[in-house]
Amino acid sequence: MTDQSELRLRMLHAAETQLSASPEHDISTRAVCEAVGVGQPVLYRLFGDKAGLLSALVDHGFDRYVQRKQALATTDDPLDDLRVGWDDHIAFALENPAIYRLMFSPMLARQPAAPRTVFKLLTATLERCAEAGTLRVPPEIAAQQIMSANIGVALALLVRPDIYTDPDLSARVRDATFAGCVSRPSKETEGGSTALTATQLAARLRRNPAPSLGAEEQQLLLKWLDGLGE
Amino acid sequence: MTDQSELRLRMLHAAETQLSASPEHDISTRAVCEAVGVGQPVLYRLFGDKAGLLSALVDHGFDRYVQRKQALATTDDPLDDLRVGWDDHIAFALENPAIYRLMFSPMLARQPAAPRTVFKLLTATLERCAEAGTLRVPPEIAAQQIMSANIGVALALLVRPDIYTDPDLSARVRDATFAGCVSRPSKETEGGSTALTATQLAARLRRNPAPSLGAEEQQLLLKWLDGLGE
DNA sequence: ATCGGCTGTTATCGTCGATTACAGATTCCG
DNA sequence: CGGAATCTGTAATCGACGATAACAGCCGAT
Image 1: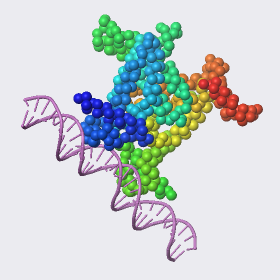
Image 2: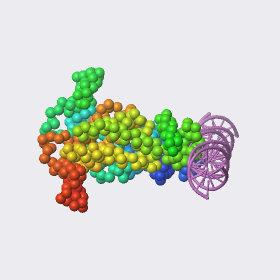
Image 3: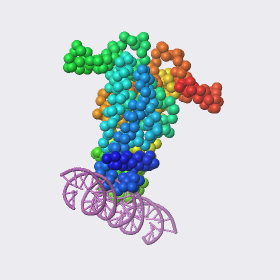
Image 4: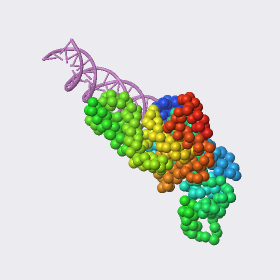
C-alpha cells in the first residue's frame, strides 16, 4: 500500500535527480532502478515502460505546479492575481529547469492531461476579471493567449539565456499580453465598449444563471455573448 | 565533393522523413542508413554521432526558415513586415511540424547557433520600425519579446491543438505583442514620448553615425539612448 | 496447511548507438 | 608509370539500454 507508492515516489525522485544532472536531458531506466536498489521489472510494473516513467514525472511536476498555484493568495484584485500567476509560472520554470523542460517538451510521445487543469485555474482567475468588467474577451480565449505567451517566455529564458538577455523580458511580455485582453477599470471603459460589457455579463450569468431563462436559452445567450466578446 | 554533400542531403532528407513519420518523434541511425543504402560508419563520418545528425537536421530546418524569411517582400511599412514575419513563422511551424518541434525542442543536448541569425533578421526589420519612429524600446529588446511569444504560440498550436482551439490565437497574441513595443505613427505619438524619440534617434544614429562625435562618444550616446528607450 | 496474488529477483532477448578492422577506389608524388 | 597515402565505403562487433520471461519468497484469505 504505502510501500509501493513510497517506492514509486523514490523512483520518481531518483529519475528527477538524474534528469537534472543529465547534460543530454535523458535518463536510463537501469540507472534509476540501481539508484533505488531494485531490478528493472519493478520499474516496468510500476510505470509500464520508460515513457510511462517520464509521463509520471511530468504529472508529478504538474502536481507541484498546481499545488504552488493554489497556494498563491487570492486577492480582491484579479488582475494583480493574474500578474502574480504569470511571475510564479516563470519562477517555477527557472527553479525546476529539468522538469519544466520535460513538462513542456514538444517531443513527448504522449502529451499530458494536466495542462487542462492548469487552464481551469487560469480561467477561474480570468472569470473574476470578467466579473469585474476588465476582460475584453471570453476567459477561455484570454487563457490561451496568456498560457502560450507565458510558456514561450519561460522556455526562452530557460533554454536560451544567451539570447534572451533582457532581465525585464518576462515583465514586458506579461504586461503586453495582459494589455491585449484585460483592461484596468476606468471611467472610459465603464459602460463604453459593448464587447467589454458582453464579456462582463456572460461572466455574471455563468456564476448566477438567470432564473427567467431555460437551460438551452441560457446556453444560447452565453454563446451569443461570447461572440460579442470576441 | 558534390558526391558527399549530396549523400549528406539524402541522409538528412531520409532522417526528416522518418522523423515526420515517427509517433515517438525519434529516429534510429540504422534506419536512416538503410534508407539511403549505406552502412552506419558513413553516418558517423559525416555527422560525428546521432546528436550531430539531429543538429544538422535542425540547421537544415533553420536554413529553410531563413531562406523563406528572406524571400518575404520588404515593403515600406515595417510594421506590416513584422506582422507578415510573425504569420510566416506560424505557417512554417504548421507546415513543418516535425522539424519545428526539433528546432525548438528544449530537450536538445546542444542548442543550435542559427537562432542568432534569425534574431538579426528580426532586429533588422525592427530597426526600420525604429527609424520610422514607431518603436518604443531598443530593437534587441523588442526582438526578444516578439520571438519568445511567437515561438510560444507556434508550439502551442502545434503540440496542443486540443487545448489551443482559438483560430485567432496567433493574431491576438501577435497584435498584443506588437502593441507592447511598437505603435502606429500618429499625431499623438509624434514628438510626444521621450522614449519613442530616443529610440528613433538611436536607430538613425546607428545607420548614419554623427560625424561630429567620436567613436567612443557615439557608443556612449547610443547606450544612453537605449536606456531612455527602455 | 494451502492456494492465489503481490512483489521482488536473476537471466536473457533484441535493438540501438558507436567503433574497429579491413577493402576498394582515387589522388598525389617520386 | 607505380606505389604510397588518403578518401570512402563495408562487414563484424561491442557495450548499453529498453523490455520481457521465468522463477522465488511473502502474505492474507479460505
